[in-house]
Amino acid sequence: MTKPAVSRRTLPSSPFKAPVTRRPEQFSVGDRVTHDEHGLGRVIGAEGDIAVLVDFGTAQTRITTPFAKMTKL
Image (tube, rainbow, N blue to C red; front, top):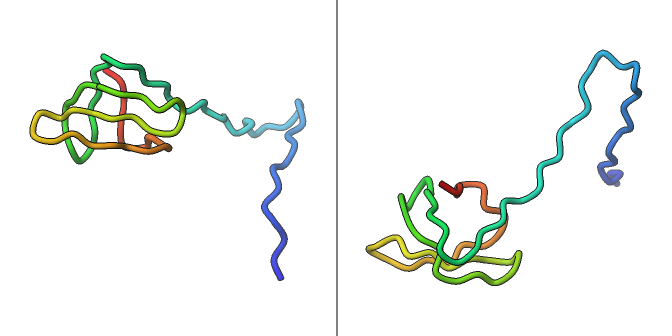
């Protein structure tokens, strides 16, 4: 039986930096994006923080969170 992962508290006097937590990137309709596999595209639909629909020219693809391979231009 394994214990669940627990985030550790860092002390202010610690010589190590605290881990940085990034907010997931937010996309809205009309944003230009680049994707590691599909290339350049434009967001044509958004489902809140769940998924976005992107037109890459050759295909329209629904991409769900996390958007690890996609960045906003």
